[in-house]
Amino acid sequence: MRMTLSTLNWRRREMVRWLVTCATEVGVYALDSVMQSWFTLFTPTEATSIVATTVMSNSTIVRLHLDCHQQEKLASSARTLALQCAMKDPQNCALSALTLCEKDHIAFETAYQIVLDAAATGMSYTQLFTIARYMEHRGYPMRAYKLATLAMTHLNLSYNQDTHPAINDVLWACALSHSLGKNELAAVIPLVVKSVKCATVLSDILRRCTLTTPGMVGLHGRRNSGKLMSLDKAPLRQLLDATIGAYINTTHSRLTHISPRHYSEFIEFLSKARETFLMAHDGHIQFTQFIDNLKQIYKGKKKLMMLVRERFG
Image (cartoon, rainbow, N blue to C red):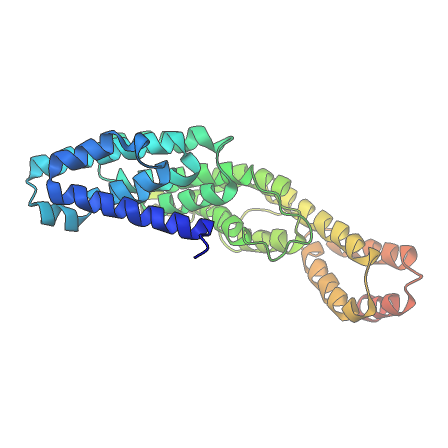
């Protein structure tokens, strides 16, 4: 039988589970000993996802007939293990550590600080967005916001990545910022403009930001009686300008290698671009100039420019 890497990994995980199960059959001290010497027996991922999780499970507590003191002793060892693993391998263990430390304030704060320390170099935007969503789910919107902004600094969405898997996370981060208030939204928009070059994503964010007042239902349920944000002022003006610029750049990129079978799709794209242009106070003039430039620069694409004239004049 040929042993693949995945087979070996599966067998190792099963051996780890078997070892932990055996330790639970012997009692509390064997488990404690296993956790204290985890680094000689397991990888950080195994130690958090299998060992600590098993130790803190209700089934283990019931099987060992633990009293409150014994439960807390094992839980404390498991939390210590989880924090050590998170420091050693934050990419794979930080979320597990946060989950395992939820019921202990000091341990939870320590796990959160480990994430912040690792965010600059040791974690990807996917991992940071995942932890940020977890923080929101646990009722920590400002911490979720902090992690989301850190995730944005690692992200780069190019003009043609309109189906990128991170798009939902970007939309979520903007919605979270919007719900917290104008200051939070104003702080996240420059990060969005720097990280996202995809016109359709930017226009979606812009549209959502103009529908309701930022912080309308803020922290603790307080209602904000503020007005809708103006597109002529920061921060939405910066987002509007970036979206228009993205539509212009994307249009030229598409026209470089466009084929006739994509002409109708391109015309629809220009229609979406026009919707964004018209959000600016001088948008009609800008869009007219934009179309005139296209007709001049790409006059060799006669059929396509005829379709442009038919739709946009």
